[in-house]
Image 1 (cartoon, rainbow, N blue to C red):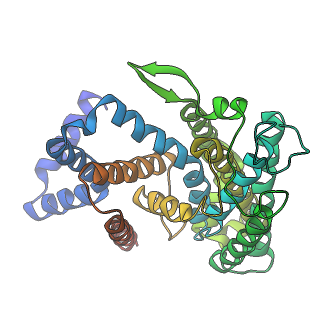
Image 2 (image 1 turned 180 degrees about the vertical axis):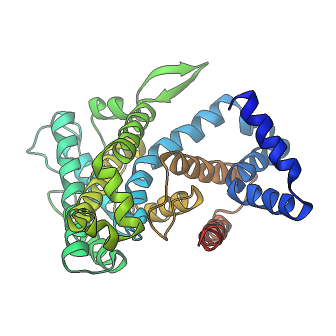
Length: 355
């Protein structure tokens, strides 16, 4: 903003009466509540627990945020279409277990498929992406072609995918056990580090998350597909009249979301090192919460990549901060629910004001 434009805005503000100024201040605090709350939370936790902003803690927050960012970016597209995706966490779990089973070290005593040697990393990455894309395609197809609400469709696929995951864990010599003993080529590729700050390494998957975020920003803001996604989310009937293929757009959004879940599962398997039926449980809830907090609106057609990033980071800061403060893990679920409720209330208030 130039000095002249700033002076004009200041002059216009001075001309307003007290009621208008109060309304503008109120609107400012509501629209920027996310950033204000983030700042207050960081300051308060740091005062109570001074180690909160230490280098290892900051890198831990960044790493946890990076691990959760791809799934949030995927679900954000579904929310922009006024939908959601309840199957995301289970897709992550299925992909994680499949990836881990194919990348166990040869000769590992509890190797799931003893007759299959450890596969190269990139073919397994492709398999992970294809699994996610396939389930996403099914979600999008059923939503678009059968005119079903995404809540119903993804609730169904959540149960189907979970059943497939349980059956997969019983195959080979695994007998339902956790899958561990991952090959160093896999864990090094995901959880290894090429950069340290002091003595604290930054995991490689942080850089992968940054690349995925840049790609998604480009897709949302610089492609016809991105424009169509927002148009369909805002008003599908108007988008259809304007020449947008609504069904194809919905299918592509859910397929792209599935790709992001597949990538999340591939990263998660190596990050946690031991994968079971519980892998991915409730991941979609954290992702939905992050999107809502970040301003991706369930009314449709509203959302920005930077908002999703802020939402993910804010959630990680809150939960890492609660851990620093010694808050009971069960109580954290209550706090998470309250955060979602308040964020949705603020979002709906913004929508009603605009309307």
